[in-house]
Length: 261
Image 1 (cartoon, rainbow, N blue to C red):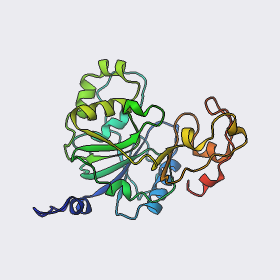
Image 2 (cartoon, helix red, strand yellow):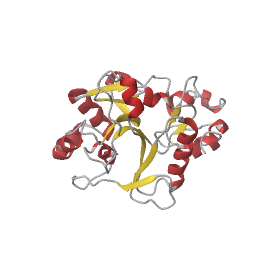
Image 3 (cartoon, helix red, strand yellow):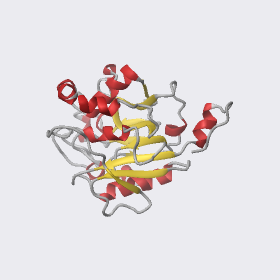
């Protein structure tokens, strides 16, 4: 990584940092095509130089342009996985990766330029920038589908070790990794949130409320850059439409298909 001059501005420093897009795939819920589509979407919508990294337990079928590494082991007792693995992205040393990283879930859909996720000027040097929860924003819990952080630079040295050492207590206090992540960062570092128009929830912001969802197709809100899928529906389901537990009925969203490829 290039060393900045003593009087270099923050923008100069950003320009010299290595940029990474990091994603994670484990288990059999999502195939390699999700990782490959994510790489394709990033390549179309990010004009800045970047390296794509996938932390995974199975790299078969993943585009060779993507650097694959094993998901780091966690020192945890057996139990249900609630996204805890994503916290390993904060290991003080992660496969010699050093620079600014944007973590993206593999089931998102990128619909517009995402340069701003890297050029966003955080207020604090150790800030993690994340999505603010749509449903209960007053809780100040971030949605970890899209977050930016400093990777491999020992900026958050105890984030993961604190989780492992106090897991028995922590898992009774939070339901998933993003709640722990948000709480820890607010207490020990800084947590900032993306512009609320950038990352939209398909569930809450694209689908019209019941009963209008029966007659109106989901729409993309103005200013959106990334569509987040959480709950039971995923991009292929949204494209073709259908019914399910929480969303009951969704009319097809063919506009998504042009982006999710």
